[in-house]
Image 1 (spheres, rainbow, N blue to C red):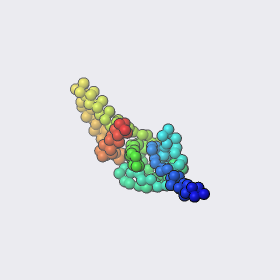
Image 2 (cartoon, rainbow, N blue to C red):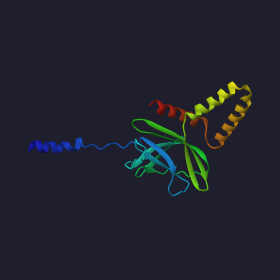
Image 3 (tube, rainbow, N blue to C red):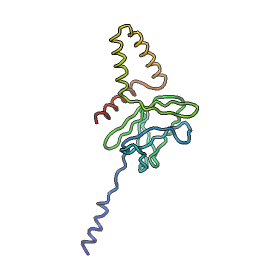
Image 4 (tube, rainbow, N blue to C red):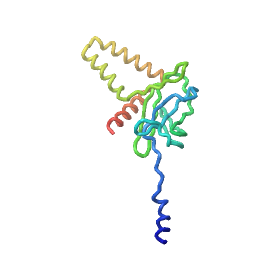
Amino acid sequence: MKKLIFFLLLIPFWAGAQEQNIQDFVIKENLSKNGKLAVVALDSIGNTNETINGNYLFTINGFSQALQFHDGVAVPAQKIESSTFVFFSHKNQEKSKGRLFYIYKTDNGLSPFAISGLMFLIIPAVVLGIAYMFKKVIMTAIALAIVFFIFNHSQGLDLSKIVESIFSSLKNLLG
């Protein structure tokens, strides 16, 4: 009888709750189409992780914000007024995950497009390679670079977000 009571007292120590970690996430338009985005927590195979509930800390364009998740979905408070670049980052106990998105706003709603940070290395390398091979193309490459930076600056993408996106992509690629 004493052994039974002893084992019954040890059961709470063995039955510990698992921590809920957001392994991956994706950005979608909120179902209510109110100009807001929805952060959807994903499991390891890419499905919505409906076990995620509670507050989780995200960094959105450099600002820390606690997002309230219900069944794996959270809606940030900010409304998207025009097309823009948005960098989402989340750090849990194991690793950090960051993604850059271009949010295209139309009359029909928002369309988020994920942008790989490696593209910020590949595209300039290709342009420089072409410019090096064809020296007459240098003026075109310079003009494209100027247009690229003007477009990025007017849409809210600055150099710090580009560098952070590149490092995040390299970290995810290597680890």
